[in-house]
Image 1: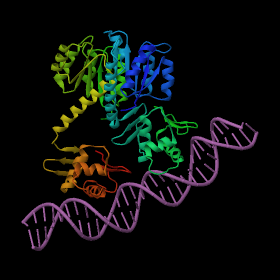
Image 2 (image 1 turned 90 degrees about the vertical axis):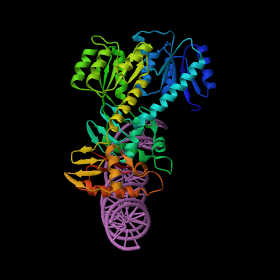
Image 3 (image 1 turned 180 degrees about the vertical axis):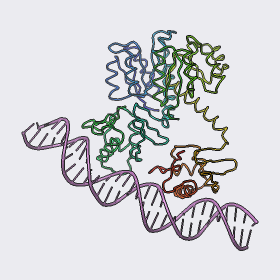
Image 4 (image 1 turned 30 degrees about the vertical axis):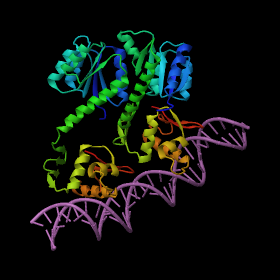
Length: 229
Length: 229
DNA sequence: AAAATCTGTTACAGAATGCTTACAAAACCT
DNA sequence: AGGTTTTGTAAGCATTCTGTAACAGATTTT
């Protein structure tokens, strides 16, 4: 994957620079953040394909950031830790990371871990292409193309299902109508964006308890729609 | 497999929670036990499809539990251990674990191991199935290539049988016409997808009580067909 | 407060898709 | 080779879906 975006969250400037240099040389795009809050703001706008994260951070520590990330995506995380601790407590906290690297480390090793984790993530993303998505009151099964809302099967049309599947697989991400047309319809010929509006309405009718106060398919005024798990 | 039950036996609450979270997100049902004795009692009542098992446990350790499990079923086991010792791994595998994960590990990785082990287990269970498929009003016997609908034998042609067999072996999964052509006809030369339509119709004529309101061979509009048991 | 956007709702017609039937080609069996 | 069954194709009909337009209701801006 050329030009894949990687976020590096590290307060020590010298370390951040070295990491950044090596990753760029390996063909990645790199975005460096020097504290947790900045990282959060930046990633809100653009989610990277992978995060390299120092546990010890000013303003918002690595664990908090991990939880925040895990809440909204499966973006892989590689943690940097100062010292190796065998205790189960640390083990538990480190969980949620996809790999971890102990300082001091060789930048070359970090690069190969990044490669490995991205490769693995890609594979499991493919796996999940046929794995059902499960939310508290909503099951979406791509193989049987069935949707279950509150224990009750709902029959969606082809476009409705494709749309829900796409949005549910990218939770919390806002899509403009044009983006949805492009990713779900493909860009063969021009289709009026208002078509999306109507489809959203039809979907709400089927999967929302109260379609006029949707809990999953939310309107983002002036922009488009997003799926909230 | 939708809603497959997985038991997690792990005394460390934080770890158990993370594992549980990830497995649920992957679409599994999860039952957590915090010690070996509780696990034993619980599984006595309901046997899970797979067990994630920490070796170090209070009240009844992982090895004992493994032995207990192996005594009464082939339920796959994935072992967790804090130690990186090779000897544990070998002991565990010999004991009857199907896979082995060392802490600290990425929960994402555990999920894909679970998938892999279940896939393997399913396959070997299915392979042994040159045995007939039996549904309430429908028997399909691959050896004699006979089909019995409501106590009455129906004579299918070769293609009809192959098609029914394939679809019945993948219940609820939606296939496009092209997928069916590829998996049943093979892709030697081009065959018109509408051929599938006609075969479906002929099959319905033979196995459905009311062919125009099929209960088994269902149309998925805009996509293809699926077999509903 | 009015104007200007943007979104929600509804109805409808054309497009897309599937069903049914009939027929011809291919394969199969004596 | 002749007859029989199976299999693939084609065409018209029936059904379902989908895009659009028009209007009503919200929300923001002026």
